[in-house]
Image 1 (cartoon, rainbow, N blue to C red):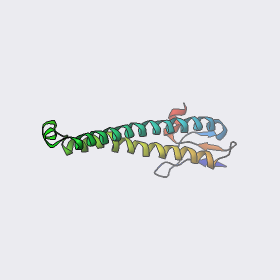
Image 2 (cartoon, helix red, strand yellow):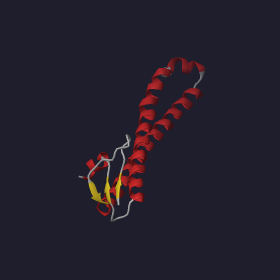
Image 3 (tube, helix red, strand yellow):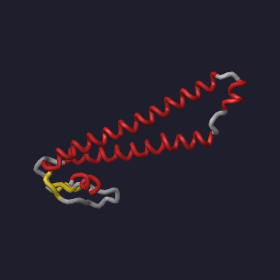
Image 4 (spheres, rainbow, N blue to C red):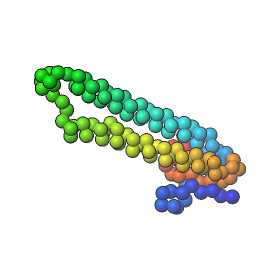
Length: 126
């Protein structure tokens, strides 16, 4: 039985290989991608904690002190949010999709099957 991994456009791709050869690599690939997800989520978490601390510190200031300290304009905060939260979380979604694709290949095939793996994954196999 030949199992083919599909690209987003539905076409199979990649070089056919024995599943047993690819499984150890896929396990390492999944672990590496999950580590990347954790690192990105930690960066986002640190940014959000920092922002909350800054906001709390600003709110606890007296009115006079607030007047002199200044607060970041809202559009600066929006740009920071996009840079530190939104874009990294998009990357996390992509990584999770790659992880689920690799897990799907592993669950849908037996060690003796000949499978095709997607080019994105195969690039890292070589």
